[in-house]
Image 1 (tube, rainbow, N blue to C red):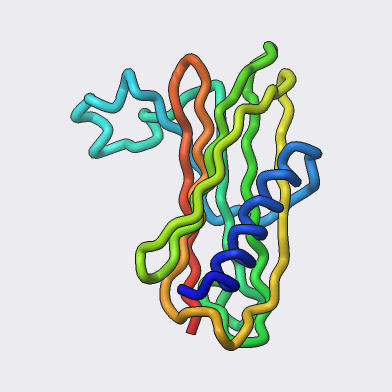
Image 2: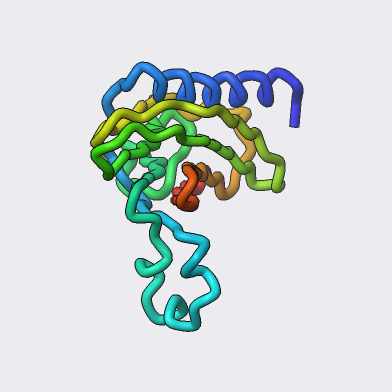
Length: 162
């Protein structure tokens, strides 16, 4: 991947993360989940993955196209990239937030930071980009992970660029 493209996409991931710190709004949700490591060993999880959720944190990740199919984008379409993390408690939490953008060839751009979340606070930034012709074709993933002292939550959204 070219250095220029990697730099631009790194900026997008960084912008999503920084927007999360200031609480910009986002409404689209492609995937929402949480994860509790104490329950991760349970065979019951194979039948009900929601049991593996950390009840303190809910996260979402979203990659949505404005084209006819929201899961597929072509050159010139607009793609909205968003994530959210919600403190489901009535106490302040110190949350480690990790965003990971994965490219079709498997390359990744990670961003990690620790943020304070007030009781019931939701951070939900959104960034919109127009798909350029030089963007590699294939499946892209945006993973949001949030963890506190009681476990981790994660969600992954995908979009196909054609």
